[in-house]
Length: 306
Length: 254
Image (cartoon, rainbow over all chains, first blue to last red):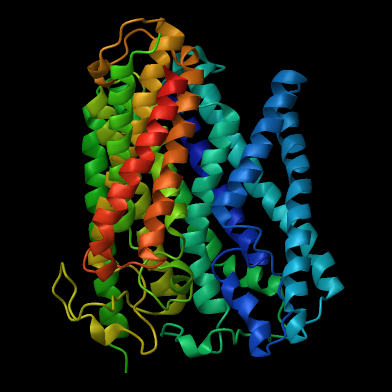
């Protein structure tokens, strides 16, 4: 194997690793702020007379927020990299750090206004909850957005202007960096919202409902407000969800980019795009049967509702 | 000078792509907010978000294969979208099984339309199903494929028209040329047409998914759902809206 072929494999590995980090931290960031669909219960709780210490920021849906953050970070990155001629490794954290200022501003406004709207039901605004969670949101958001912007940089440069000329055109997407990071952000948000949030919404938010059944409508709004020790806040949720929900979200994003780029890379290496289609169809069949296996396994293991 | 025939034909192609996106959207198993609490069948997110997420994977694949023949781009983009959707549905099932201990089940039918198994007994009382059972999985895979095909047709039309004008400087365009391969064009030459085409296709995803989301009101299980009967209404609306959008976009690209 020639050195440039090894370099391509290394590039694929870096892409998957960055996607894993992006998905993982994106999901955890959304859970600190009860960002996505489980937010409906945090919002409903004060109306049911449940006083909680959760951070409640639904700035928008996760994909829309990450499109905003990714697009901003990508745009600032290009300005620092091409406009101010900074090294990409310096431009990247600088751009993402500035983006987090926007993010934290949105989070602060979203939390205060959401809790203020619950004051009709006598719900207080806890200052310590507000101040303690904001840096955490910024930190997790920083990791996710940095990974997304770095991914866009790698995708763009490896097809348009690679450091090693032999690998040109084998991997990557010829889309400008701000548009690419906006689109990768939407995908990261869509994945985090549809997979990782299940662990928060179905399990952690309703831990007093028995394990092994869906949450019936009558429990809506009555979220679990006491932790293993003391009153629960959003940090306890991140601690719990980092064990399964966050990891699986990262795994999903990594797997999608791995399967897609592996298809692209193999087709390009053999200079035959029909290989892409065959691998794609095979992957789809394998995924379908894996899903069927999990369904049959779980029905055998857990049995019918009784 | 803009050729009116090319303008109308390009707008019609984009309108057909819009109808495909609408059909793909209505096929996705979407559970919305209740699905995040394992109270409804499907994926725990909004229609537009899931469609945009899966469609973008297809669009990026189409952008990477920009110089290939049209049918290869369209097929590959559809498969990419279907892979994204399938992986998400698979992991959603893993989380619902391992994270909450519930087997996937649908509630609108007593038997799974594909496997003919009795699924009613696995549904928790007070809920309308959970997870993504086999029929919903197949439904979502086909829906994402169709939506990915629609998105890549839009991408191809706008990208080729813009490339002919900006890069090649062609005066006379045959509309069938948008499905033919591009020979001898390096990626750095087509950066602007590709950026225009992916952003237009992304906008088209959101427009058509939104119109269709009004029809399904947030939650849909699959083709056996009564809301699926609203498909012709959604498709006609999407066709008209996308036709207007297509004329405006073709005016930019031509």
